[in-house]
Image 1 (cartoon, rainbow, N blue to C red):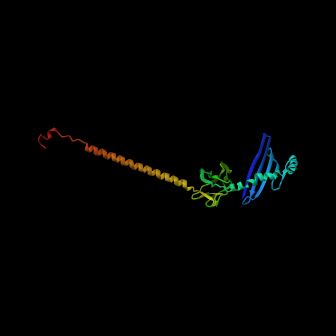
Image 2 (image 1 turned 90 degrees about the vertical axis):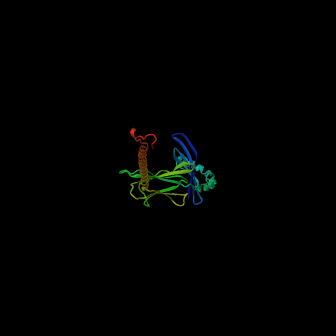
Length: 256
């Protein structure tokens, strides 16, 4: 296992042409981080001029002035004390931190539909994972895809989390299955996120069938309502109709 921790204890900027930086780095190797290497690099105007390596145990300079300065600094065991303070004294916390993991959240979606000579594009996104190291690959019908694949940088989400995006350009074919495979320290088995190009079609078919059913039901209800209104009108006209009888045919008094 490899873990690198960077320290930037000193950065001084006086002008665009006068930039000084001193950066320290602790690199731990081995299953229990038992191997440690401490380095410090001093740069002037973004060019390294001095370097200390704990494994080598000495400073080296890269300019005539810093070569002479390195000879003087090598008389002082400053590097050994600093390596112990920054790296070895924090090893217990680093070992605890190395056991903290967060499982990535995976999403696959289409960002560009196929049109003519332009291929379609899928994006597989991994969110909220820790540590930073992660591996993403694409499978097409169970075979790894090596062309048309690109990746974003692993970007910090904040609060120790990271995110990354992988893009696949391809020409869709009927009945194929595309899978985004994600491997991470937080999971014992890879996460498989399957993109089935038939799913959007099926979803559209469901919408179409549902819409047709709704329209058919509306037509049936409308026809029933119209039939009911016509029947009610005939019934009312029959019950409320009047029959005119001539006066001479009216019954006389006392007759039934």
